Structures are given as structure tokens and as C-alpha cells.
Amino acid sequence: MSQTTRRGFLAQTGAAALAMTGPAKADAANDKVVVGVIGCGGMGSSHARTLAERKDVAVAYVCDPDSGRGAAAAKSVEKAAGSAPKVIKDLRQVLDDKAVDAVWVATCDHWHAPATILACDAGKHVYVEKPCSHNLREGRLMIEASKRNKKVVQVGTQRRSSEMAKQGIQALRDGAIGEVLVAKVWNSQLRSNIGKAKPSDPPAHLDFDLWVGPAPMRPFQKNLLHYNWHWFYDFGTGDMGNDGVHQVDVARWGLGVDTHPTSVAALGGKYFFDDDQEFPDTQYVIFEFASNGKKKQLVYEQRIWSPYSQEGEDNGDVFYGTKGMMHLGRGGWQVYGNRNEPGPGGKGNVSLPPHHTNFLECIRAGGKPAADIEINHPSSALCHLGNIASRLGRSFRFDPEKEQVVGDEEANRLVRRTYRDGHWAAPKGV
Image (cartoon, rainbow, N blue to C red):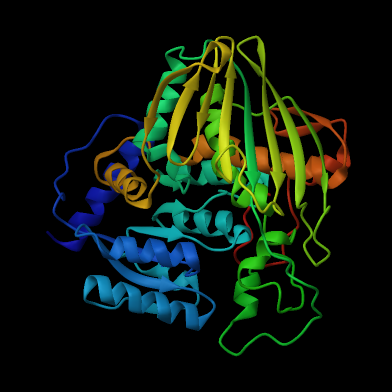
């Protein structure tokens, strides 16, 4: 099959995925989907290795502003696939290549939305890591870019493709614990003190200007890269957006709410770490939803200085219903009824390959992916709203339709962000 014909097929099936008109005929079922992996940290490298092992995918590019990380990812791809991808620093080179069908965006949080929007506009399908956005406004722009270009956009909340998690959620839908009114999420684990650092020159192998991208420019400091950017306002979303978003997404899924909350309240701050981290190490956030005329509640609690597991797991969900409760974690789900009597349950796991397969099948045959951008946006938005309330130390009301904070202009400004003046990747409409 010619490249033109193959790309025409992928474009048509991508359109079907967004239009939901039913699966297209898989004329290119035996043809490889050509991809680029943008961001080669721990998660990006894992994506690259996993994709390289597939027979239906060709990893053509690995891209990272740190040349050392790009080279390491390329070696792992070559080992798995038998051929090495091109190693580049600037994602525009990937997007300019018409042979590339899809990209995996596993960058820092502040690049998720800009890279996704640029990729959709360049005609690529996108798998983007969680949280889908750095701020709430970006999530809406990503939805618009996906629809405007008729491209599939999958977010890396893998539990949506886990058979175990789907079985647990179906049990909730079937009334296993009665009417589900409250969900609780916990993020209880032991993180590290990142210390305090002064501005310094970036290492020679890092293009720091590319790394900062559309975010406001600031001096390099050693405890910013690579992982610790999670804890800085300009680049990350704290651990609520980093690890917590997985469980927050499951909690919203299980509650059956598909919109934003109407009220947000939070307390939190740095109770433990004395370092350069800007986000809370301790958080307690409560969201209230108006769902079909009834109120529902989602609670998020975080202690990232805990040397112990809570309820048997570092991170998990509990659902409270009128007839029982359900624990849903990484390894399974369990219902408890009257006086904690054990009820139905199931075991399983969460992994990357099924989520990759779900995304690739939607590119080829149509349909909406399990963690479609429109599905994930409200979950990532909860993390952003929780961080806003924690940062300001006060509660506020939220308008789900307008996606705006009501009566608090300072909080409403944080629904968006400031971008570097004139940067080529700054999204339009922000």
C-alpha cells in the first residue's frame, strides 16, 4: 500500500473516531502506524520500549531537549525493534514529517497541551500523558483541537483500559453498594526532599530554552530537572496532578459525574518538606457536584511524606454507597456490605499495552478511546481546581458550563496561565 493511501486511510478512520459514525473498514490492518515519542523521561522511555515491541507500530522518532535522554531512549527502541529511530530535540521536526501518523507526548506537564494542539493541527493523532493539561483552560483548547482536526486524542490514565477497573466500575453501576454518593481518593507515599538551589548554568547536553518552551522563562537550577519540575508552579501540577490524577479520574468515573464540580474547598500546604517545592506536600480537597438533581462528593487527601501505606496501598479509591462500600486499587476491587461483610470482588492489574492498543484501534477502526480528551478533561480539571483552592487557602464556587470561578477573580485568573511572549508553541485562545 502506498504511503498516500495509508495516510488517507488513517485520516478517514481518525475522522470516524471523532464523529462516532461507526468503525471504518481496516484496509490497512497489516500496515504499521508510524509514531514519534516526544519526551524521553521515565514514562516516555517506557512508552518507546513498549511501542517498539509491537509488530503494528514503527517508532520513527524519539525527541527530547536533553540529548542524553534521547540517545538512551533510541537505544532501547533499537534493542526491541532491531532498528534505531531518529533522535531529535525539537518536536517540530516530528510534526513536519508527513509520514508520522501519531505522537506520544510524555513531556513535562507544561508542554502537554501545547504539543497536543500543535500535533493535532499538523494532522497527527495524539497519546498525551496525564494530566492532560497544565491548567484548566488548556484542556478545553485540546478538546477543540481534537474536534477541529478530527484526530484521536488519548490521555495516559491507563485504568480506563484495565479490565479489572472496568469490572469494578460496572459493579457500581449495577448497584453493588446501592446509590454511590461519596468517593474518597488518597495519595499517601514517601517523596524526597529536593533541597534548595541557586540559579546556575544548564548542562551542555540540555537545550534549556526548548525545555522551558512556552512557559515563562526562568533561570536553570539543579533541583528543577529532571523529575522535580513536578513541584514548581510554572511546569508541574504537584502530586495531585502527577500521581493523584489517576485515582481522581477513577473516583469521578465511579461517581458517575461527567461534568465539573459546583464547589471546591481545600486546606493544605508544606507541612513537612523545607525545600524549594512550591506545591503542597499535604492536601485535603473536597469537591461537590450537582448530578441529576442530587449532590455528590469527592474527597482527595494527600501526604507525600508518609513511610506507610494507607488501607494496603499508597494510592487508591473508596466508594461509599447507601448499601455498602467498595475499595478499588491497582490490584483489584472489593465490595463490603452491612457490618463490613465481604461481597463481590475481582483482581487484575493496570498496564500500558492495553491502553496503547485501545488508542491504536481507534486510529485504525474508529470509535472514541477509553481515556478520550473529552473524558479526561474534567478529571485533570479537578486537580487544577484543587491546587488553586490549596494555593489560595480558600473555597470557591465554580460554574461548570462557563468553566470559570464565580465571584473570586484571583482564583479565576489561575484557571489560565501566562505564557512566554511570542513563543511559537503558546496556544491560541488562552
